[in-house]
Image (cartoon, rainbow, N blue to C red; front, top):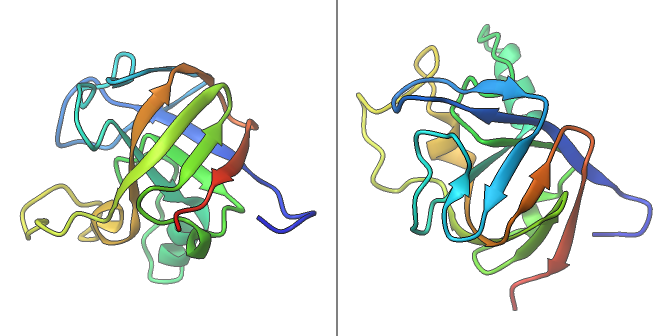
Length: 150
């Protein structure tokens, strides 16, 4: 990221069941190889953590969709992260945790999968990541691009 530009965690969100929005938390614990402790989607694989930019959620407000953090089922809502600098393979430091971006969007998404008021924003524009190093993550934590892909 360019000097002086800072990204941070806007919210951290979990749900106890699949196919639902997630509820903002004061803090979450990310576990290497599993994802967010206590989240219904926790488990090994390429989509251990889901990430969505708050700016993308705000854009839906102009379309009459009044969504908040977690409504699109993302685990981490970021603010100020330049998504054009994040690709598969990018390493992100998020609070105490270290994540490797493993995917963008959900290519296999289809109508009928989880959406909020008809929009599947996470499937359209979200990031998915593996947890390389676990740790505590909370709103206000800094998000740093440690290594860009390429």
